[in-house]
Image (cartoon, rainbow, N blue to C red; front, side, top):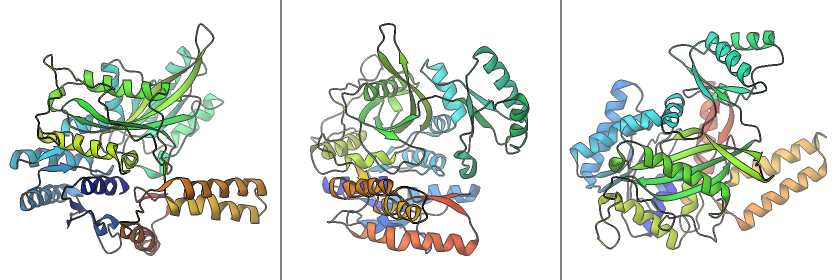
Length: 448
């Protein structure tokens, strides 16, 4: 994944030896293993099932012992977060290696949408009205009560687990009549005790944002915030002095400060936010933010730190501080005498001001060039739409940075575009697996 490669390159350029470990098969080759930044690479077993999870953790422990690894930076995908949390506990019990990864309890609590929302409620942080539902009856009961108390309020239903087919369903509830709503909900047979869903208030306005933070012993060391979409493929950092950046950083800082076990809280912390506008008493427009999801893992937005310069070096030093030392071998203490976080905006590491935003060539080639051209050829869009798309594509090529390609380290991009994705698409076709979208940066194929 792009985030792991970006961090590996950053550590390498800062003078550290980097060991890579990832899933790597004939039909899904790991492109990052071919990076110049990787000194040694190890294949990891699939963590599926109980024995698979045990073998996965054991393999990581064995690698760390064999290579005398001092710091393990977890770059979990959504499907391995819990296994990586188990690995963190085993690694720190059996070796002197430190881990950038939350423990099992914290990871589980933040990963599940329902428990994350409950945690925010306990911490008195702003979230939309949210209910965990385990049956169609639950959905209708909560809809009836909520809309009676707040006429006009609408909701969307989200699966709690990994569900590519239903995840993108943005149907607003209730529908125009009670009968239509009941018929729609009755078709959602996937909702059950063993497969709960989330009924969450819809935030009008449509502005979505995401953040990435590195937390070391309760202190936020690095932070970035970006505009977001349902499938984010363009990364642009919000300016640090913007009101939205301030609000999202303050939310993250308060979440960390109010969380229990602050002194042991080390890992990646990412939030998804929705923003809405309202008019204040003095007729000014104010944007409010609401956290809608938490990812207790590295976010792809970390690629915005991977630009040579002081900020990249500072980011690497922030990771190294988890060992208890900084680049000058001085003790780092991130918790003050009262046990609260000493996070300050003055010491916070953010992407450079001259940052180049990130895009992925394969995605833009299809979405901004080939697809608009096809629509125009079939008479479905005006020529001006095609010209606008091509201009945006050219802007990205000449002023942005490709998310995987580096001139000094070209092989990962070559493998990603010429081997990994062709092999993945052919494998899906051969095995009859249907898909709707591809996320080039995370190497995720969305089933349908």
